[in-house]
Length: 390
Ligand code: PMP
Image (cartoon, protein in one colour):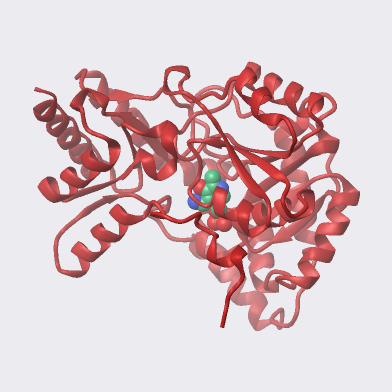
């Protein structure tokens, strides 16, 4: 039977960017000791008190269909967190709970794009973005951010791409680059969205991982709250990736329609997961800082190690659990470098090319293993690059 063009075309053909990851996992299955610096997953698990709350509320009976927009307690907690972080007045009616940030990204595009509409996103990008846009029957169009600008997108590039587009998807703190958009980048984005009448979809799932500078939510910029949908998630801030709990924040009328979409797609998020998430948010910013602390520490380690050599460049970044390394001095592509590194030293990093053409000649390192092993792996990567560059 013939399947839809939409589902068959989701990845846009060609590699899905996960070849190296899959090769590393196969090596591990074959018994090779691989140091994995690939996926964005904490090396700790969800904290026991959060799981105990999940257990308690499930035993108490919160196992039936849960409130589809999200429980009042969780929507209020998300609204309060957002208001505290951004200063923008946020009410329960501005929040819909989704099964993770990924579902929120998809729902946001369904909400603002009609079939065939053009949806912009910035390259380098989180691997699912173009497929998510295609899944919503929109046409992905990338705007290239440049390595020489430390991957801050240029206003002129955005403006040139905006002609005829419906939406712009941005992500700061950024996966894969770790870059935090500056105030002037945000002002340019806001100007382009206003001039070209674009919806802005702002993926802020790394908003608790800020090492340097300030996280600005564009919803807080003048005139932007009415055209911005913010994607959030418990995954990264609370080490709850497997719980699949996220949200969208936006204008009340848009959220009302997104709740209708939830009714017709996921039918909400399990009640015990929502209760555990409310509890986790109640632990406050101190808890989020605790979850982020290992990445902050490892970034400092990496800065020391990388500043002691000059073959591998570190893209100046301020957040998220990743580092983007410029390995162009080796003469290799990110794909070839990552492949050789895996074969030679059994260290797995993601080729920049997995995240778009703009990141070619780079590799992304996830700071997701214990400090000493992380430092050893980085030193090894530098020595390997130095040998190649000679
Ligand atoms: N956005 C970005 C930039 C991400 O890196 C991820 C996960 N790696 C997500 C969204 C989705 O996260 P989740 O669905 O777990 O909330």
